[in-house]
Image 1 (cartoon, rainbow, N blue to C red):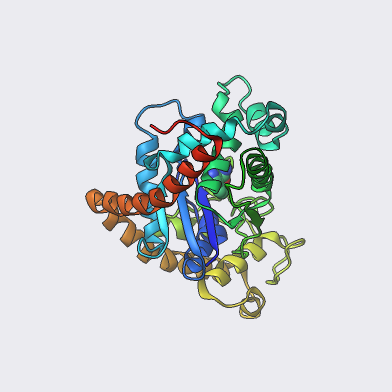
Image 2 (cartoon, rainbow, N blue to C red):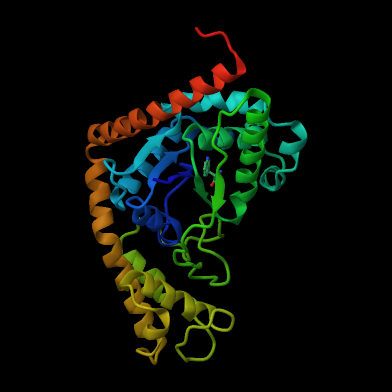
Length: 328
Ligand code: TRP
């Protein structure tokens, strides 16, 4: 079975755009591929400066991943720092990538520029080496990624090929794949931008844990387009198109078919809001149930870590043996 790995950083709440755009596809994919899903807390450390945040964020994200339907008996869901092989192979990867290669990473250039006067950790710079370790540890065949992560998979391939060339065949060389497209969810207040937690206001952002009344209100206040025709047309009617896309993602119908049923904006907003409330209702219930039983949640994560460690430990041992390190 094809092994796939997708990882997510525990930095802030999951929102509807994350879910409909990406996470729901993970849930659908878990039965057709051998899926590994890491909550990459070590990556979050590159920008963590406040105590007692990363652990809670990790637990909350884990609860959300299980709540949306990742099945710990099917997929391997684990916390990166629970599998210490990530740090260990990460160092070996740092020694297999050059300063020049890391300097060319556009995400580093963007992120370090955005942080301006803030602290830019060396971890932010070496992060692709850790990501390479994440991927190579699991003999990953495919890494489903968006455009922003393609370069990191490319550098992982370069690192794997270099290591294999230097020390003999050790790693499977992974490839980046385009994930099955989820819904493209835009900001409700600025439907030309993707829904994102970095947007200026929260009014256009639906968090997975928002209260029903709040969700309905956000949809009611969604920005729509100047004329009053309901049709699916991303270029000219981004607001209405976004509502149709979200409603379609909730009901399983096509946006075009839905468009024929509305002649006014008001009912479309109300129905989209209601559909999202209903979609999230069981997820929220399951989330709160899991969060109320932390020991159960931690036990699910221990199961995931054990499954992950079994694979990761064998790969690390192979890499160390290939280099010819002295066994402990
Ligand atoms: N860098 C990815 C992001 O910011 C997260 C990530 C870390 C990742 N390790 C990975 C993604 C391994 C895929 C595979 O989104």
